[in-house]
Length: 213
Image 1: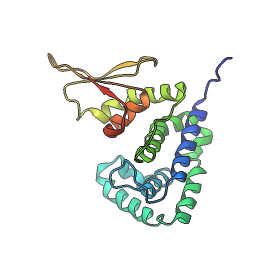
Image 2: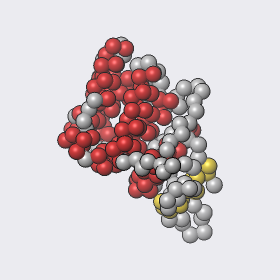
Image 3: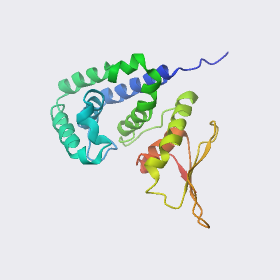
Image 4: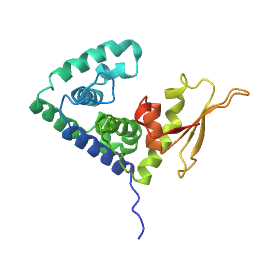
C-alpha cells in the first residue's frame, strides 16, 4: 500500500492538535520545561504570539523582552482558574494565524510554527515524572530536520565555538556542519532524530534523546 504524503498543512495541523491536547490534559499550574513557566504561562505566550505581533516582539527583539514578559505574566495570572484556561485554549485552537496564514499560506505556517509547536508539546509532556517520546511520522521529522539545518547556527553558535555537526541518520542530507571546526580541534557532533536535535538546540538538553561525541 502506498503511504499517503502529508502536505505542509497536514503536518502543522497535526502538531497543533497535539499541542492543544497536551495543554488540555494538563492543569494550568502544571510545570513545563520552560524555566519559571507553568502551563498557563505557555498558553498565554502562544495566544500572545499569534494575536499581538507588537506586544510579542520581545520574544525575538531583546530590548522589548521586558514588556513581553510582563504582559505574558499578566495574562498567565488571569488563566490560573480552569474555566479561564479552557477558554483561552479554545481561542488558541481556533486562531487562523496572522493574515489567516493557516488557511491562505500553509507553507509559511509550517515554516514559522512547526518547531515552536513541537518544542512546546514536549515542554508540557516531558516536565512530567514519567514521559515517553512521541513517535512522529517520517515527513514531520523530515520537515523538522529542514528547519534544524536552517536555524541551528543561530541557536547554537555561542555554545559550540569550536564547531558543531548535527546528524540525523535516515533523513535526507542527514549530516550537516553547522559551525566549521577550528583547526586541530574536533567539533562536537550531535546525533539523534530531528525532533530530539531541535529540543537540544532549544535548550532542553537534559530532556533530549541526543548522543554527543
